[in-house]
Image (tube, rainbow, N blue to C red; front, side, top):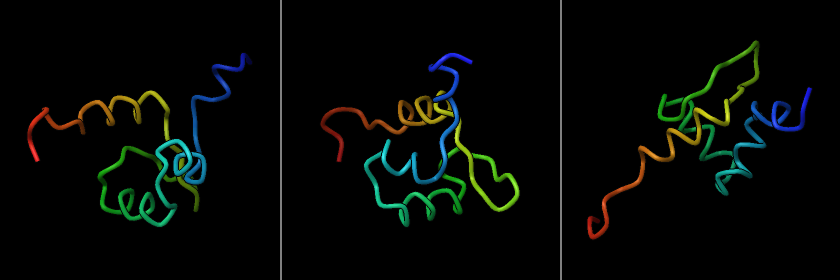
Length: 65
């Protein structure tokens, strides 16, 4: 498996670091269904590509508050 493929799935902790948000905030957003992810057993997993797409859709137009 190449390095790029290994980094395609993130844990909640890794996603927290990636988004630069506290784990509690990420967990709350996941629980509310606002971040794309899958629960496998008792743990959450997040596809990097899905997160990157989600981030792109969350951008607000310039000048808008």
